[in-house]
Length: 355
Image (tube, rainbow, N blue to C red; front, side, top):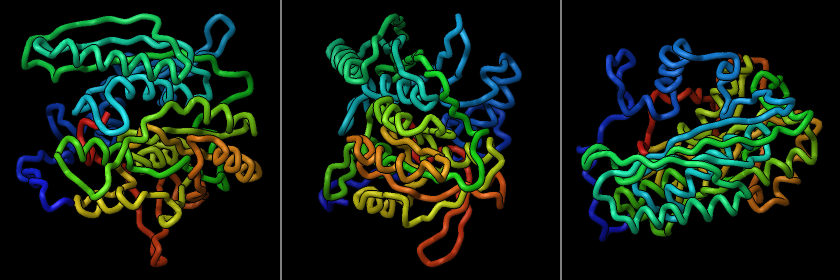
């Protein structure tokens, strides 16, 4: 950390890991961890959940008019609105495009809803909209419809965005955690933890010797490259809130298999590792916005890995572990010292407001 940078007031930070019996919503309920899962399971699913929702994937796969569609929605409340490597506009497109891609779909159309706080500068809104449009063109999707609402000053945080998206799922593609079996190879598409640290660095005014840029990117092209090798991929996830640890735990729980990760095989860039060491964070739990984790049948793993490394968004893809029959529903990491530690589902979130 730079000696000339004023340290953040850590005493003013709020704990993101509250007690489990909270009678009110707390920040941890939005963190993508155990509290988020409980809110969905105990409140939302009983109220309106149906067969499509029960799969609990990054997007729902539904049949309509003889076509298989992936359908997803996401809301973005990141602070600050602009950060190294992206903005809330880029996140709004890439986050929803990636959720669709994790079902193997070819994303096609997005909706876009803006919630603006009274008093936000029109030029800021313009910059966000232009970034969103740029990201949509890069991802090859069209923003087909939208909505705008304005809330009173003090009842928002400048700009919030919701995007929903649809895409076609090609015949023969069936990506879901229930297909994972012991022996599947776990591959991550590149270095983890970059987005969360990039956002934190500008939000808290921290310096780590080099500028850390978000990995925010649309992954549909990478997924198409992988599916061109084999349609028999078992599951894909983009490890956003809760990071790689949350994604692996969700897959282990849904598949009823265990997961073993080789800790030293997980690619963590040195600036991210250094930042996490200073701040007391675990990179496995830090959010990503341009990475995916794949469970691939072992006979196809080498070919899929080679195809990923030939794609610009997968050049640093790495095999990090495998699915096992032991300890079903649990993720463990083999440490560099030969020990084993449990990688549990996070309770809340380490870094609030990162997407």
